[in-house]
Image (cartoon, rainbow, N blue to C red; front, side):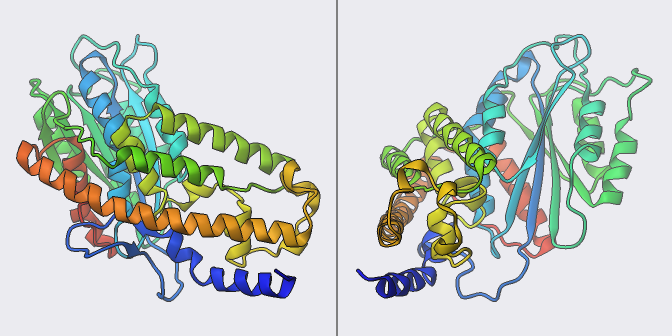
Length: 395
């Protein structure tokens, strides 16, 4: 293939690559694979920012396990919103004074593999005397995160726990003051009570009411059900193949970042339960998941999209194994990788539909409908309408 033909092929792929990368598992009411944003006028997408504030004391083992299993499913459901949003998530784990930590924060990020890696380290320990350091954790969620200002941003905190706040710490910012600050910042605080410990419900309801949020109650163990499907392993294997087709480039610092990201992504995929790993792979196929999938710079995406010209990239910024390739050979490699990625994307779209239908049937048979993930999505679906987003639950 000559250079002119290769250039024409790259230009043709540039018109379809976004569609191939934008496969979203379709939600209820969607007939098939959604090519999010294709053919729409380019404009700043809406943004969804979520911080989970999780009690990680000894009684919360079931909820923490539920969060590990369901965080990708939640992210995937948000990614299906129309119009397609940018998504950032953060975490605040909290216990109480005298425990291993009072709070542990993971900053908001669109690299959800990083967030998931932190979530996987959480274990239920400490506590034991009832009330916890809820006030400190809630204040940090509102004040210590880089919330985006302006219109078109859905800013949400989910406070999830089973015990009320300790109110006798004089140096704490108490929850009424934090709720006032949240209202000023346009942050909605939703509260999800696990179990039925005395003294929790009234406070959880007051926090939600004072911060324009919603209150929900779930079982102590999170009330979720992991539903593995016959399609999960194929999804995971296709995701691994997709990762092998990435070509990172850039200066030494950028390449180090990208290589570390690839290693972290592989660890996340391997460590996750089959259902969660499949949810992660399908999240990465959405427009919102591109930052998590590609990282800072990825050669195939950037060249095919026209964001960069291959001729402008110094050879020393390519992976070492590609530096000896001629221009024709490198362009042919890019075309080959993109073609295979398109095929993988199409197959993942088919599997997304099959998984959705299988899980919907299993969920209906189980009768489980008010667990951690279901309540998070139900609340978010209602609140998303405030910034013009329509969300369809995946299951």
